[in-house]
Image (cartoon, rainbow, N blue to C red):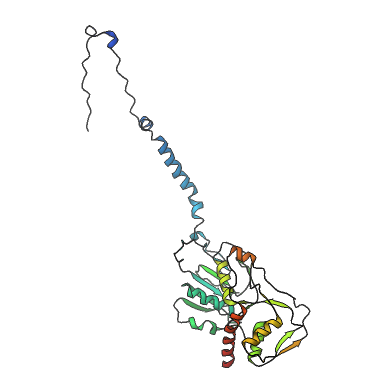
Length: 320
């Protein structure tokens, strides 16, 4: 240990020096850590550091409760929900792929949703009992290693580890809610009773298109790819809904029949039948909320989408 020694100072005796020149030696300050901090002006920094550290440990449980990993493992498996919160990704970076389950994924809308999810690089599990869905709708994905197909009825429990759930098999207790309006496109059932599929199938079979009432009642029709985009926008948002997903463009039944005639056969005819009492005169979705909060609106017009549906129906009718 090094020791510091102070050399003694020669002080003249009172006889040799005037009294006014003599002064008392300064009293040394106590060498304590408090005195050192005060002298060096570092106390403020110590207190500030202690405050920050204390605040972090007090708030740590609340901060981590907002992370995706904190979501309960007991969240309902069959719901239209995101089991992890939507992460914000910087512009220019692609979000990481998810493991997604689509119930009813072999159906008309579900199969198109599966196409889009796989295109984006996600892994997809389809759960379907094939009551209305068809295996042929997703058969082109069977060799894809990121695709799985399970035949299962969603009324029975099933355990799956996934990040996203699109529950299209049943509308019971969804977390995010979408009201789906008239949708058309490839893979619709040929004879499902919907007006678009009815008109297309009748025209292709060279049968009269059936119009109920005077044909002046209006409907709106959205192409299936627009609906898929709306569902995905809702899934990745922080909003619950409900949201109307449909095309606000209106067509009378006679106008729809005319578009079908122009697309398939100008010689197609129309057969009028009495209308039912409960048939609404107008059905048009208000998509203002979806446009403002989801940034979504349909892009495919009826004249653009209908030929794609006709091509699919024509091929399937030939295979019958």
